[in-house]
Image (cartoon, rainbow, N blue to C red; front, side):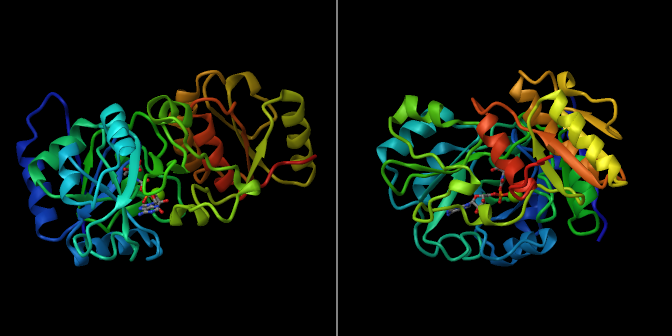
Length: 344
Ligand code: TXA
Ligand code: MG
């Protein structure tokens, strides 16, 4: 299959391109599109065969459910059994935006592979002009996971999607780099208080301001097995080919680590704020000034992918502060590193 990557330019009429995308989706094909978080790979959520193509193109395990994207908050009344008051308030406050809300789905409405057999469904209205235009014209719910090969960092550009899914999907709507760079917050509203299953751009303090108590996930090593989880969080994720180690953002600690790695005859790529740049690193990727966490989030996946273009044996990544979107960044880093910290 030939994969076409088509630029969706804000200043040009893209009528034909959107019609092609809608026709393909209605014909049971998959199409990649940008959202404000990361690129998604969409299929109509009621079409089992189309959704199966998403799993196949990504190489995704079938027990990991997909998020259903909607173009209008009112649409979800058709899809779920009821909308609790707290979910309503969060929809008012954060949609369109990076918050996926888990609710009890109406039975037999979505294709069973969308929800991986669960009785719940994750819903989100993305805040991106291309995604919203596509949804408006499609008038159907669009199931879409991140448009990467399973296990790789989520794509934040159309070229990342092309790199991963070339020859596996027919069309990529390329709307340039995504704004946030990390996947949405996933929160379970079938329980009260709601539970955050995956941290993201809508943080726990932001949710608390709107609905009061919210349960937050603990970091990897202190997880409580009784708390529900997003099935996807159990898989190795977001990882380049070389092993990743987390490290404190301190120049002396990083220098010692690099010396040790070099002594073992290995090379190292360092992802860190410019304030932690160590010249001895064989490759350096800047995560910004260390204070701007938005910049850190936005550039992280592109840099993790760029490590695969180097011959680095080891990737060192400095951890961010954990306020704001820092919690979500650390969550993804712990997965990329499989929980490993560099200890000299
Ligand atoms: O920002 C995002 O959320 C992007 C864009 C494309 O919208 N999508 C995304 O999808 O990251 P994906 O499939 O890569 O991650 C979806 C996560 C997985 O961890 C999955 O297990 C969880 O959401 N999830 C989906 N439906 C669920 C459900 N009914 N119950 C619990 N977890 C669910
Ligand atoms: Mg994903």
